[in-house]
View 1 (cartoon, rainbow, N blue to C red):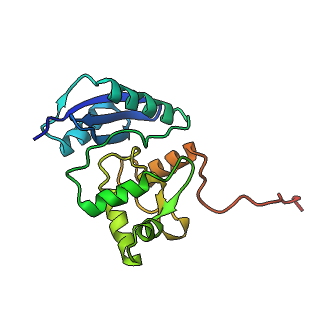
View 2: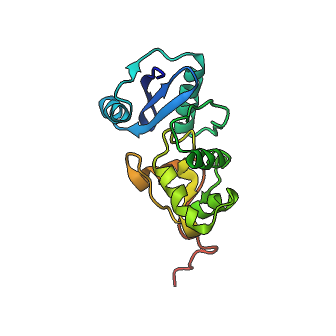
View 3: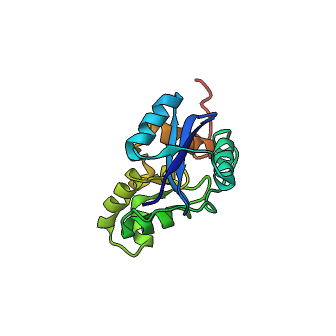
Length: 185
């Protein structure tokens, strides 16, 4: 069994956590308001993980995360992940979700269709997003419910966090702004 190391770090969005082993990144914790809360959430999923000093490739992932939460356009698709513990279909879903780029969204149903699965697989896509071990790196916040509705988000802050992350990328959910303002009569 691979040894998991982790570290907690601060971003403009709050405190995040990242875990890795000899293969790649195994876990990522989206921000919470304080370091202790992030560590508790993190260790709930990886109770045997040990704090460690991040190697260069993890330092790069941390720097990219900090830039992301500062509002900079960041592409995480180059980061090496270790998803061996995930179900094969979930790994296929995660691979497809990684192709959804900055400022773009898709739906659970569209991802299911891209994988050659029927509409009933949209629920499986939703479950995979809810269990995403490396949220942000696999951009589950960019996957919406049918009709472009927000859908669920199991990270700290729920839908509000998902909305804020999308807004960082310039994605605005909700009705479009009116083309012309009222003259006030």
